[in-house]
Length: 89
Image (cartoon, rainbow, N blue to C red; front, side, top):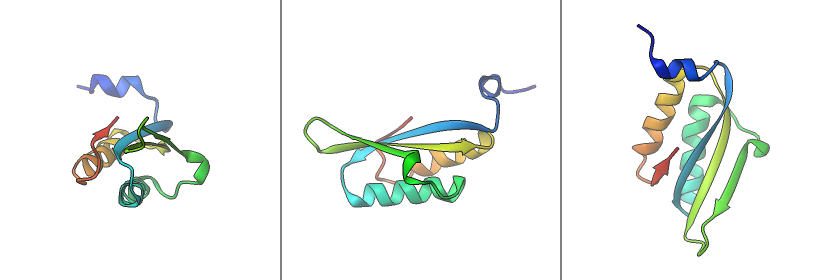
């Protein structure tokens, strides 16, 4: 039996991964390292950032070329267990 969520995506595909955390260099460095470990190097044009209104938090969006569901699951698992990511979407 196939997983119903696999029908939502045609792999490979462009896939945005959004992470939110405290606005500091450790957050940027660690999340980029995690994403690149699974998806390969990302150019600056594949990363966007948005600061919270008071500047305490940062949302980063990494757009990757997703190969399959297992790759995405591994990325999200590593991000959420990193200790610096408050939310991963």
